[in-house]
Image (cartoon, rainbow, N blue to C red; front, side, top):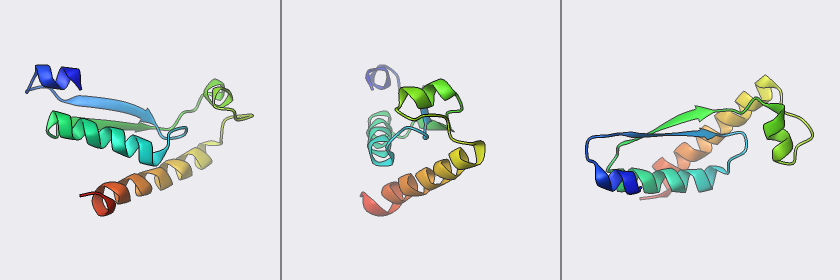
Length: 88
């Protein structure tokens, strides 16, 4: 957000792994950044594939590829509904 105040010509892209994020919390953070930058943000949506990431988040092993993508799809639906139907 500090960089957004220093320039009016740059966009800001955030990479967020939906595998271990909370949809509501991420949607709020991105909405705040969108407001501060006056719409100059992008979101690189990824699903973590490393087993070490799963272990760091208290899981016994990483989810399968298909399960990660199912989680990502549901995550995106929730975030979209928050942005488009829940907040003014």
